[in-house]
Image (cartoon, rainbow, N blue to C red; front, top):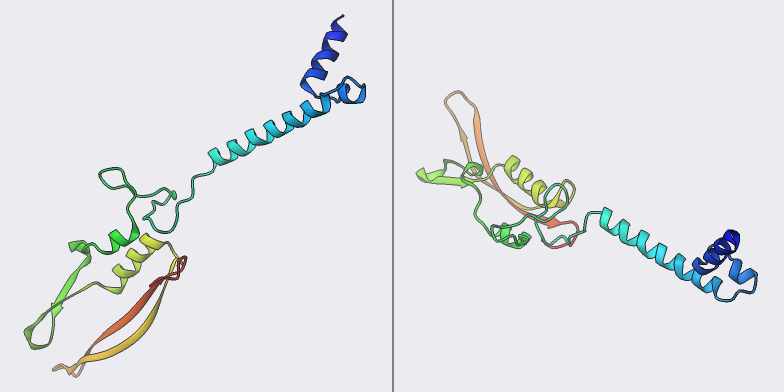
Length: 160
């Protein structure tokens, strides 16, 4: 009797193919339904174990999740790029005609772009250079200042 119950349970569950092979009817269909259900569960577990992917339009944390503002909304890259730089990232120097020039060093620009787009996530093209000033000091050393116009391209989207 116990063996009969076990065989019936196997047929009902569809594993082992007893119902299909023995002519019990429906066991094969139940088995394929169980396989489908099992595959769906595995896919759902895989999706849950992988971090969600966010598009390149948001500022991302190192773990790939979006950086959130004080209202817990993801911060769009465009919004961050439109903000003023931190004071600590900005330098000044004397310019021609006693002007005070404000600039960001190449190191700061590179660090900021790597933080925003990731290492290798951007590229730079020098579009134009202009020599602004060339002076020789009393010790015979030259001081030369150039300005450059560059194009920064976001590699993932191709936008600049």
